[in-house]
Image (cartoon, rainbow, N blue to C red; front, side, top):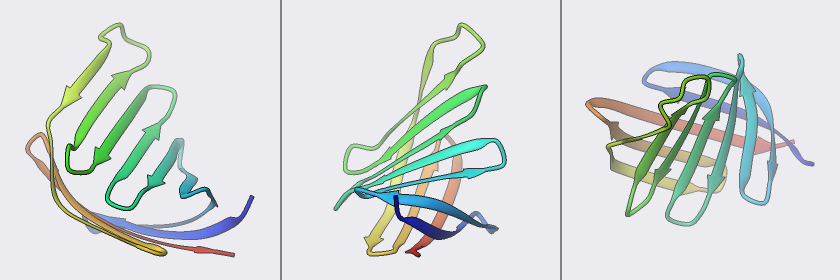
Length: 113
């Protein structure tokens, strides 16, 4: 599987890590959180998961977000998400979105090595 260098910034916090890129999917770990990002022409699917929760965010024309707590029987929570901007190019993703009342600004670059 092709390894890649990943740099991303979310709301000013910067991270650099190594990951795997295969079939338009980036996979990497940050602390104890596993990230899977599925890149399509006009949409982005972001899954963040650890032992406590799973967050699945889809940014597209019909954006949605599902938050699931794994150790508590509350089931899945649908969280309101509004896509403000999405720019996907080869090796670059920029997204702005509103999740409930919080604004997020994501910028990610990746390079297969």
